[in-house]
Length: 193
Image 1 (cartoon, rainbow, N blue to C red):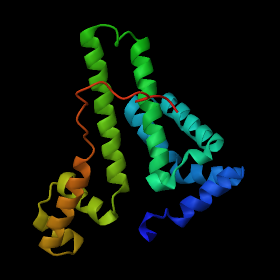
Image 2: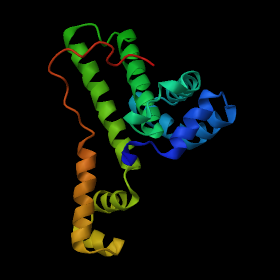
Image 3: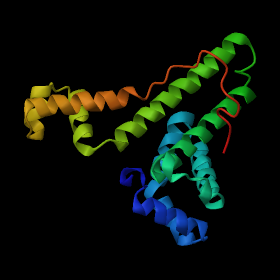
């Protein structure tokens, strides 16, 4: 199906990276580095650590361009997933080194901190990735505290359209929270790049 094909830019970028084109890496960096840094910073709350994660993600992409599977989603999503996984891995490592992961209650608190940071990072990613009309409606409702009628007037759309945008935006945002698993995580879960 045509809808299953990745965007042309993603395909070309992967091919250029596979050929070792340094300019392709620079272009990819210019396009997504702020996203990678923001996600890492959101999880780690540390500017230097976010810088390191950004470098690690781009080093991984450069060394492993074929690890990207276009059937799984966009190049942007793949890079964001790499950043998130690496940041969570770093946070878990730091938590263990700091002694937070040693005894029962500390282990639970550390996992809750990691889960909270992950949810916040996913929510940020969802909001920045959603179409501008949905994001604008949510911003009016939550930051400016406008109801759907006021949002409709500010956006120049019908009230039904404003309600639809708000509902869809909230539905997308609700996917940020993934309940913790009830059983042990599968092998390789949360592992580094």
